[in-house]
Amino acid sequence: ILFNSLYLKIDTEIGSFKLGNFYSNNSDFSLLSSGNLFESENSLPYFRIDYFNNFKIKDVRFDFNISNGIFDENQIYLEAPYVHRKSLFLTKNFKKHTISIGMTHGVIWGGNVKSFGAMPNTLDDFFRIFLGRGGDDQTSDSEKKNALGDAFGAWDFIYNTNLGSYKIKLYHQYYFEDRSGLKMINKFKENFDGLWGMELSKNNDFNVLFEYLN
Image (cartoon, rainbow, N blue to C red; front, side, top):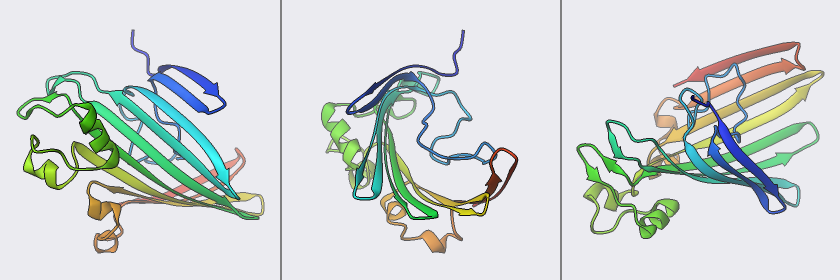
C-alpha cells in the first residue's frame, strides 16, 4: 500500500505542526502552472516534520516555515540523507493590489552516498547547514569554501491585482545554488533566468495562464 500523502497536523497558538509525508503547501502556484521550481509534486513527498506560523508587523504579514526530513535509501543513497528546508514570505496589501516577496532555502545533507562515502551529519553540521556555512576541516575543500551539503534556494516575487471582476497575477521565481545566485549577481546576465508567469482569472468561470521558463 502506497499513500501519496499521510500526515498528522496539529494547530496550536504558536503555529501549526505537521508530521508525515506531504507536499509543501506554502506556494501559491496554479494547477495550470509548470510548477514550483523549488519543490514540485512530480515525485512522492518525503517524510518530514514541519512548522508553520504567520504574524503581522504593522500591515506587513510574515509567513515562516521550517521543516526537517529524510529521504529514502536507494542505490545511490546507501544511508538516507537528511533534508532541511525553510522559507520566509513578506506580503503587503494595498487597496487593490498585493505584493509578496519570499525566499526559500534548502539543503540535502548527511547520509552515505555511493562513490562519495559517509557525509558529515553531527549536530554541529546541522547548525552549519541551517546558517548556510561551510564545513569543518574534515569536509572536502569545495564544502569548506562554499556551503556544507547540497544547498539550493529560490526567490519568489508575486503581484496580485483586480481589474473589474477579473484577477491578475504576475509572478517570477528565481532558482539558485550558490551565494552569487542568492545575491542575484548574475541575474540579468543569464537571459532572465527563472520562471515568469501571468495569470488572468474570473472566479471558477475563466482562467488563462502564460508562462516563460528559462
